[in-house]
Each structure stands twice: as C-alpha cells, then as structure tokens.
Image (cartoon, rainbow, N blue to C red; front, side, top):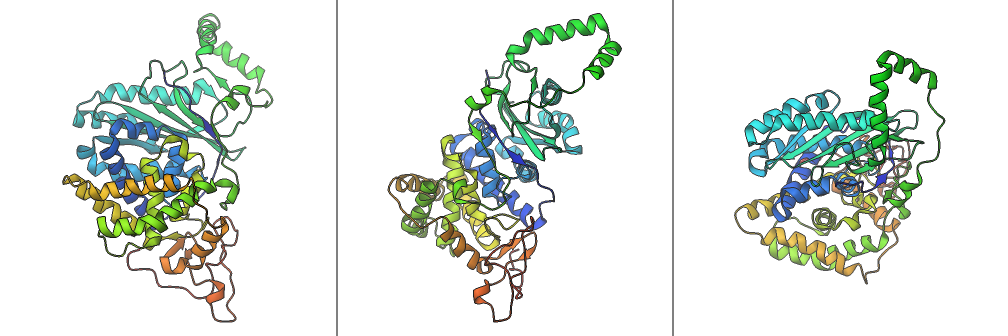
Length: 446
C-alpha cells in the first residue's frame, strides 16, 4: 500500500522561467535522468520523482528559485521537452503539465501506450481518477492547476500534481506512485507537500470508508438537488489547526524568505561537498574525464549534481543546499553562472555518451565524487556559510552570472569610483556584490 511520505511548505511565486534558463534546465534534467536510469533503472527514477524532498532538490540544482512552487511546473515542463525525443531509448514518457496541458494528459497517455505497448487507455482513466481524488476527495482548500503523469514502457507511473490557495499564497504538491498501489481511495498518496492551512476533508483516507458509504446513501435518499441546498446552508467551517497526525510525517518547511540562509542548509554536508571538490575532484576529473576547461568551480557544481543523482533519500532534507550549484534566476543565493552551468552539462553529456558505448569510467568518476563528499563530511571543516556566497557573487560576472534582471556586473569594489550598486532581484531585494553601472556582453554560449 502506497503511503504518504511527508509534507512541505511551498510559497507561491509569479513570473515565468526565462528562455535562457529553461533551455538549460531541459538539458540538465534530461542528462541527469539518463544517468539515473543508467545506474539505477526506470523504477528507481519514478521512486525519486515521488519523493517530495528529492523533487525539490532536483529543481534547486537546476537553478530555479530554491523554495518556490514554480519548481513543480518548470521541472515537469523541462522533462517533458527533454525526454520526448528519447522516449524510445529511455522508455520514459512525460505527459500533462500545467493548465491546458493537463487536460491533454489522457490522450497523450493513449498515444504513448500505442507507441510503447502498454494500456494507455487504462492509465488515462487512472489519470482522471487521481485528479478527482485530489480535487474532490481531498478538500484541503487547494485548487489543482497542474497534473504531470510520468509513465515507463512497463506501465509503472508516478503522478506529480499541484494545487493553489490564493488566499494563503501557498501551493500544495501531491505525489502518487503506482508501485504498491492497490486502491485509489484508501490512502493512495506517496506524498503530499504543502503548509497546513486548517481542517482537511480527506475522503481518500482509509478511515473515511464509512463516510464514503454514507454519502452514497445520502445521494440515493435525498437526491442531488436537496443535497446541494443542504451543503449551501452549512457553509464553510472556520479554520482549525492542522491534524496532529501531520507532525508524525517528515515535514519540509520551505520559508517565505527569498535569500538562502545558513539555517536553510546542513553546513556539515556543504563542507563535505566543498572539500571533495577541492581535494579530490579536480585530480580525478583531470585524469578520467579529460574534458578541457573543467576547473574547481565546475567540479563544485558537479558534486552537488552527483549527490542528486546518487544520494540516499535522507540527504535531501535541505533542498536549499543544492541551489549552491547553479544559483537562482532571482539572484538568490547568487545569479545563475551560465558558463559553469554549460560546463556541467557538457561534462555529464560526455560521461553519459561514453556510458552508452560501454565505457562507464567517466560516469563512475561522478559517482565517486559523491562518495568522496559523503566520506569527507564526517571530518571536514570549512568556511562560514556566507564566505562562499560572497566569493561567488564577487566572481559572478566572470562565470556569466545572469538573473531575470539581466547580466551580472563586476562587484562594487572592482568598479571605477562613482559607480553605484542599483540592481535588485525579482523580489525587490538587493543582490549584493554583483551589480553596478558596468554591463558585460552576454557570453557566446548563452
């Protein structure tokens, strides 16, 4: 029986993912998926997508706003674009999406089933029922607006869908996993993410079986018209504290603040990653990957990516840490280093391409980088949390740093006298040590 695996708070963010980042997210998400499937198989990939902590970390390492509900939309959209051309090779099909795309899910499943040989019509019915359960059977005040259905050639699937509560400015993400699922109406969720917003009517709980039976009886005895009048007279009850049972589940509390703070990360793990990149990474990569231009900064990003590919579920309790790989589009924790991002993708693509030809040595080097980080974190010490961020912001213009506001410029200390820091992030907060009156030309790779 599939069970809930946790919850998380997801602040609502407006705006769109810019094309320069969306294209990179597609390439990085695709090659990371290829690496996971190569090492662990399609079923393990679905299990990870059903884990809300891993899913948030996956989006954060791609350069999205680390705590935003927009990670759900952007990750599903990026995977749909990137994996579609590889569906025949990987055996993974991404259907649905946000808004009108979610309504196309049943037909997309039918088409994918005809191409791959699974029962797409049956999964189309499952897709509709999953949406109904989370929109009608689970009445928690969140209106569904996104439905992503990922299915393999074997017919295994995961659903990631999200609802919005405008009044609370919060989103809630629901994860479903077909593995072990025996009933759609008795505790079917793999996980639910979102901030507790009051009493929840959850008819999908196995303890609600008597309530479901009673409702069918009322519909039979009173008829739909009288039931509608009775419901209107009752009105909505006042908000109450979240059920105590929520405290028994793993809970990821994603705060409203945009900046990444020391309390948002597990510093011991960060020190292990930095130590692995500084002490072991460059030597290993220089000998095994033999990819020109792979410096220490790229290896630091690769160390974060390697953990998302290989890390155990317990290691994703602090998704904010993975934003230190490629920053965030709003400038927090720092502008997206597009040159580093492109190098990360290039190294991974080279490793995956070699693995397809039977040479796993380069892809195994990335796995060893993750193992080295986990070993070193037991003893590694390092700088304060703020020190690497300050260094990254100071050098952002050298890495092709970019946000939704534009290109990063030399830090104020490096500018000629008279220049002032004036740019802000998407939330209006100043982005320190990355802005000024001097603008750089966009890198040729952007």
